[in-house]
Amino acid sequence: QQNWVLMVTAQSPTNIAVIKYWGKRDETLILPINDSISVTLDPEHLCTTTTVAVSPSFDKDRMWLNGKEISLSGGRYQNCLREIRGRASSIEDEEKGIRIQKQDWEKLHLHIASYNNFPTAAGLASSAAGFACLVFALAKLMNVKEDQGKLSAIARQGSGSACRSLYGGFVKWVMGNDVNGSDSTAIQLASETHWDDLVIIIAVVSSRQKETSSTSGMRESVETSALLHHRSKEVVPKRILQMEEAIRTRDFPSFARLACVDSNQFHAVCLDTSPPIFYMNDTSHRIINYMEKWNRFEGTPQVAYTFDAGPNAVLIARNREVASLLLQRLLFFFPPLPDTDMDSYVLGDKTILKDAGVKSMKDVEALP
Ligand code: PMV
Image 1 (cartoon, rainbow, N blue to C red):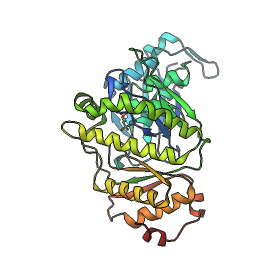
Image 2: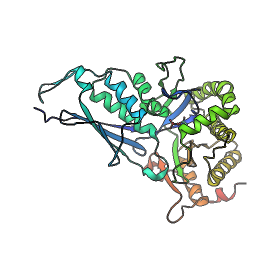
Image 3: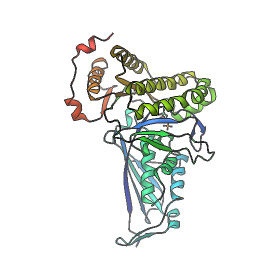
């Protein structure tokens, strides 16, 4: 009776920070030096699907990412597996004749298959969706009876930003005070339906792998950037409160101003790091310049921009009409090259986007 396989499949979207996490106070537990706030994307467009399976016939833990076997020996995977295994409960499925006792989980091995529904080479391969999905699927499989917040603290140990992908909508990762990280968890600020006018467009500026990983970038910034310490102590705490209020009241101008200045300060910290880290490139700078001009021309922000540890632009339009105009303008000013260096993924309701009122190109030419 060694032939059974028990499987669970889960899906998890990625998230984009609008108040950035940059810098750890504990590298092993992945504890940040400031709170952060993100928006979780629509799972239809950028997400990871993970199937976890357990069977007495498996002789070791194995994992495949997009069909290719990868090693599970890294500390981050091991931490997540250990934390989940330690919280596993017994399972009884009379129909299938499966009975797993709590202590059996330590001996049983797992097979994990994970897929990203976005091109892995597009420079968008965020580990956030991956670890959130892995932890969630494992918790379901092993009958872990912890709430979402506790699971977020486990996902955090895989990749910091992953803790925010356990929830949809707007999410805050509370840095916490505890040395063991028990209070460094994610909480949902607002559900996915709270502000559904917003449309997110990601402009893939370069699909090349970043030169400096977020882990080593953060370490270098913590060690060398005075601006980072000023930011985490003096700037972010106030910004978090303002951002929470902007989200609560759906105040797009405040939301956009805060998201843009925070992204720019994060990249200023990178420049203030020694040696400096350049995540954005000339195209990223041109996009910022263009969005700033557009927002100034309109008198009130229409589009927020934010950039993570890479050159790709995440653009948040205040509504579908603006999104549709934004897409036209992006394609006009930054036409995708043949053999492309620039592509765009529209995250939002494509059919509605097509139907949305599109202003003429004259508006583009009239810009300063
Ligand atoms: O969780 P990591 O190690 O991938 O770091 C993410 C860092 C940023 O994406 C730049 C900011 C953030 O808050 O997501």
